[in-house]
Length: 322
Ligand code: F6P
Image 1: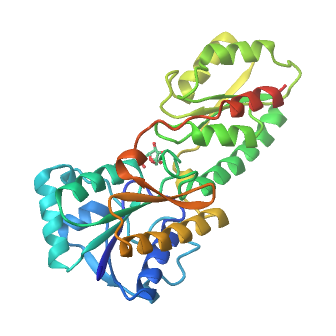
Image 2: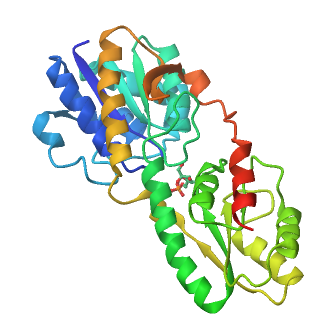
């Protein structure tokens, strides 16, 4: 391997910059050149690339977002688009790729790595934590800390006004952000796509729950079967007119900010491992961390959406919110 093409793709996540830094610095350490590709597959198709050196990643480990910028590319979904991308890689003498992203990024990487003779290794970068083959994705820890910081603030005002809040968090089709933050913020109940819990269970919980509690927080994962936070709020208001109900959708605040120590260390470890993996002949695999050890998972398996929700977590919420 002489020249690694490096890019971020899909939704940005705090810690992506730490991963970029780790890949660039470890490649240089092993005598490999790095070419930065701007805006993911879009930049690959357009040839928007530049050589990176150790200084180009100075002072970025603590910054949110991604200095390489990111995008979701429609053109790369087509065979013609991927051919253009491959031609650009050849033109720029790139003979391996490191892709930092999530589900969509690895779907593209898997097809590309099978169609063309170029080794691709992926780093899990998404706040959603919805990839198989790693206990945590880069950005998840920071995002959940951002969420509990926000919910703690919501709790202050909820408590003062004796209010019930429905707080909607991100996760695309995954409830992992809602689940963990629900425990950490002391939520009454959690509504996530993976569990059988639906709005009726929430009603039951509110009926049976302690009436003298002054504030109540319901954590809701986006894209659930009971609708968004406004819809859930409407149904609760209808059933419990006595509750002073409010809705708060946290939105993109969850994607920004300084990465946590956990995310910086995770990004640094998998970043170094990705370069070492390419040197050792790995291809079409994601580098993750399982039980604190570096682990390799094929792209095909990494993007399977069969991540089990620990049922203990939901039980814990039930026990602790009495
Ligand atoms: O995958 C990260 C994520 O933030 C999801 O949680 C969310 O559903 C989606 O991206 C939002 O995407 P966009 O920023 O394109 O609206």
